[in-house]
Amino acid sequence: MLKIITSPDPLLNQIAEPCEIGDKSLKKLAKQMERVMYDTDGVGIAAPQVGVSKRLIVVDCGPEDVRDPMTLVNPELLETWGEPEIEEEGCLSCPGIRIPIERKPNAKVKYHDLKGDAWVVECDGLLARCLQHEIDHLNGITLFEAASPRERIKALKLYEEARRMGAKPGDTDFEPKVR
Ligand SMILES: [Zn+2]
Image 1: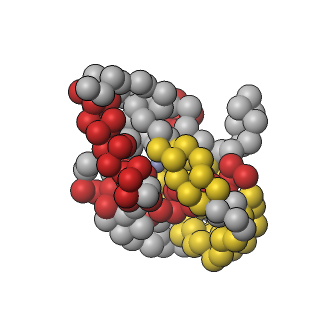
Image 2: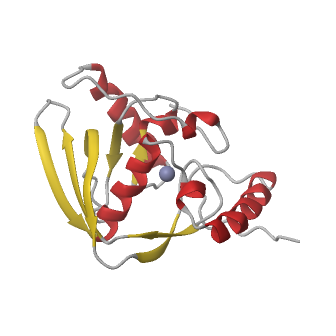
């Protein structure tokens, strides 16, 4: 099982390297990431979160009882649009907390699949939010950097407490007491 890298590991703030299109080893990595994502009840995971600095993400934003993972190689956010919405997001790399993040509700993302074919997906709702979150990871941006300055200060305090209380990747609704 791959190890999940948690904040403040500097690896999470690195810009990930592009994948070689059609690289056969990506399939194995994607499968391992998938397993970590389902084991921790996540809806998305980016390679840097398991210590691999590559532009590869796996998401599954469908119904909870159906496993339908989508692997995106070298995903690129082409466009986001719509009135920005604020929603709480959790992250395997920031266990124990959720942070309100403002994002536009629609996204258009270009990517390759594991076979090397190129695709463009246009989406909204959870998938659009999730893809923006995971692509942020490829650019070295965690929830702390994506949050507004005010939310960041609050979140860092909560996160410190959650870590001290032993929050694990996958915990999102951990509620530490902040004194
Ligand atoms: Zn994340």
